[in-house]
Amino acid sequence: MSDEQLEQFLIELAEWRIKDEKLFRVLRFKDFNKAIEFMNQVAITAEAMDHHPEWSNVYNKVEIYLVTHSEGGITQLDIDLAREIDSHFSTFKL
Image 1 (cartoon, rainbow, N blue to C red):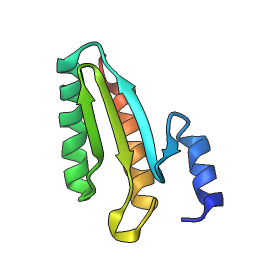
Image 2: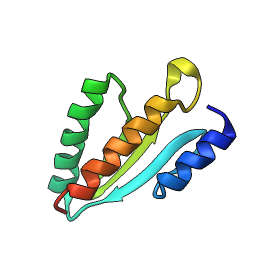
Image 3: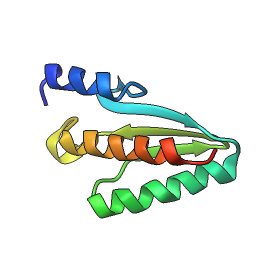
Image 4: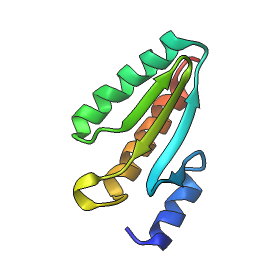
Protein backbone atom coordinates (compact mmCIF):
# COMPACT_ATOMS: atom_id res chain seq x y z
CA MET A 1 0.00 0.00 0.00
CA SER A 2 1.41 3.37 -0.94
CA ASP A 3 1.91 6.16 1.58
CA GLU A 4 -0.74 8.21 -0.25
CA GLN A 5 -3.30 5.41 -0.02
CA LEU A 6 -2.52 4.89 3.65
CA GLU A 7 -2.91 8.62 4.36
CA GLN A 8 -6.40 8.52 2.80
CA PHE A 9 -7.40 5.57 4.98
CA LEU A 10 -6.06 7.29 8.09
CA ILE A 11 -8.43 10.18 7.42
CA GLU A 12 -11.32 7.71 7.44
CA LEU A 13 -9.92 5.73 10.38
CA ALA A 14 -9.47 8.80 12.55
CA GLU A 15 -8.67 6.92 15.78
CA TRP A 16 -5.90 4.90 14.17
CA ARG A 17 -2.31 5.96 13.62
CA ILE A 18 0.93 4.44 12.44
CA LYS A 19 3.22 3.11 15.16
CA ASP A 20 6.19 0.86 14.49
CA GLU A 21 5.11 0.62 10.82
CA LYS A 22 1.74 -0.88 11.85
CA LEU A 23 -1.78 0.44 12.27
CA PHE A 24 -2.29 1.15 15.96
CA ARG A 25 -5.21 2.04 18.21
CA VAL A 26 -5.88 2.12 21.96
CA LEU A 27 -9.39 1.40 23.25
CA ARG A 28 -10.57 1.94 26.82
CA PHE A 29 -13.49 0.22 28.51
CA LYS A 30 -15.41 0.43 31.77
CA ASP A 31 -13.50 -2.47 33.27
CA PHE A 32 -11.55 -5.65 32.57
CA ASN A 33 -14.65 -7.74 31.79
CA LYS A 34 -15.83 -5.29 29.10
CA ALA A 35 -12.36 -5.22 27.54
CA ILE A 36 -12.27 -9.02 27.34
CA GLU A 37 -15.84 -9.17 26.03
CA PHE A 38 -14.85 -6.78 23.24
CA MET A 39 -11.72 -8.79 22.42
CA ASN A 40 -13.82 -11.95 22.18
CA GLN A 41 -16.18 -10.27 19.70
CA VAL A 42 -13.29 -9.05 17.57
CA ALA A 43 -11.61 -12.46 17.75
CA ILE A 44 -14.61 -14.05 16.01
CA THR A 45 -14.43 -11.49 13.21
CA ALA A 46 -10.65 -11.80 12.91
CA GLU A 47 -10.88 -15.57 12.70
CA ALA A 48 -13.54 -15.36 9.98
CA MET A 49 -11.25 -12.99 8.04
CA ASP A 50 -8.23 -15.24 8.73
CA HIS A 51 -6.37 -12.11 9.82
CA HIS A 52 -5.38 -11.76 13.44
CA PRO A 53 -4.38 -8.64 15.36
CA GLU A 54 -1.39 -8.20 17.59
CA TRP A 55 -3.01 -6.99 20.77
CA SER A 56 -2.67 -6.75 24.49
CA ASN A 57 -4.97 -6.06 27.41
CA VAL A 58 -4.17 -4.41 30.72
CA TYR A 59 -7.26 -4.05 32.89
CA ASN A 60 -9.60 -1.80 30.88
CA LYS A 61 -7.19 -0.93 28.05
CA VAL A 62 -6.76 -2.83 24.77
CA GLU A 63 -3.89 -1.92 22.45
CA ILE A 64 -4.20 -3.19 18.88
CA TYR A 65 -1.58 -3.40 16.13
CA LEU A 66 -2.48 -4.45 12.59
CA VAL A 67 -0.01 -5.49 9.91
CA THR A 68 0.11 -8.19 7.25
CA HIS A 69 3.34 -10.01 8.10
CA SER A 70 3.30 -12.09 4.91
CA GLU A 71 3.30 -8.87 2.86
CA GLY A 72 5.76 -7.01 5.04
CA GLY A 73 3.50 -4.07 5.82
CA ILE A 74 0.01 -2.63 6.01
CA THR A 75 -2.41 -3.95 3.40
CA GLN A 76 -6.09 -3.66 2.53
CA LEU A 77 -6.72 -6.58 4.89
CA ASP A 78 -5.49 -4.46 7.81
CA ILE A 79 -7.71 -1.57 6.74
CA ASP A 80 -10.69 -3.92 6.51
CA LEU A 81 -10.04 -5.35 9.97
CA ALA A 82 -9.58 -1.84 11.42
CA ARG A 83 -13.00 -0.92 10.00
CA GLU A 84 -14.52 -4.03 11.57
CA ILE A 85 -12.91 -3.22 14.92
CA ASP A 86 -14.26 0.34 14.74
CA SER A 87 -17.70 -1.02 13.89
CA HIS A 88 -17.66 -3.36 16.90
CA PHE A 89 -16.47 -0.55 19.15
CA SER A 90 -19.12 1.91 17.93
CA THR A 91 -21.92 -0.49 18.89
CA PHE A 92 -20.27 -1.87 22.03
CA LYS A 93 -21.86 -1.05 25.37
CA LEU A 94 -19.03 0.29 27.46
